[in-house]
Structure formats: C-alpha cells, structure tokens
Length: 70
Image 1 (cartoon, rainbow, N blue to C red):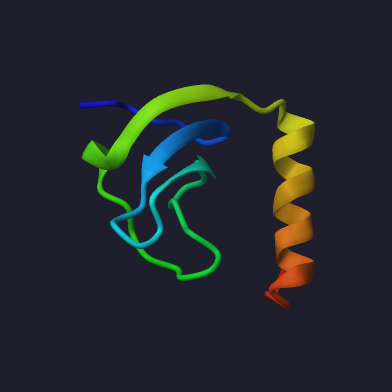
Image 2: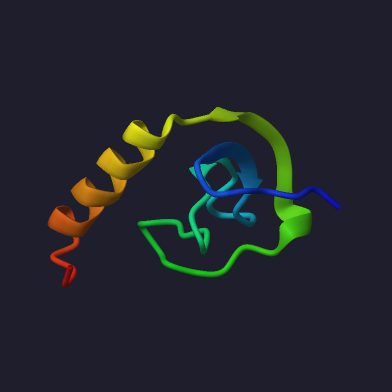
C-alpha cells in the first residue's frame, strides 16, 4: 500500500465520476469540489513534492478562499 506524506502530489482515483486527478496531500486529503476522505489504496502514483514555502502558500490561500478561521 502506498504511503503519502504532507506536501506530496499524487494521482488519486477519486471514484467513477471524479476520475483520476492530481491531489495535494495534507494531514487529510480533500477534493475541494466535494470534501471526502480518500482511502490509501486509491493513491496511484506520486507526482512530486512541494517545498515548505509552496505548501504553506497553498494552505494560506485555501484559508482565504474557503473563509476558514485561522
């Protein structure tokens, strides 16, 4: 079974209607169009790793876009 870590990009099988899409792994993996847990066996292939600055930048932008409390 694949092991994923925060800041990694993976191809993930998000189910029949969502298909296989690239996903950013965080402490949880979320599809922003429909937030749902993704089982580890659906991780297909690691695409790469973001730098700490890139990962923090995406996180701060998601907080703004989704209007989440800090």
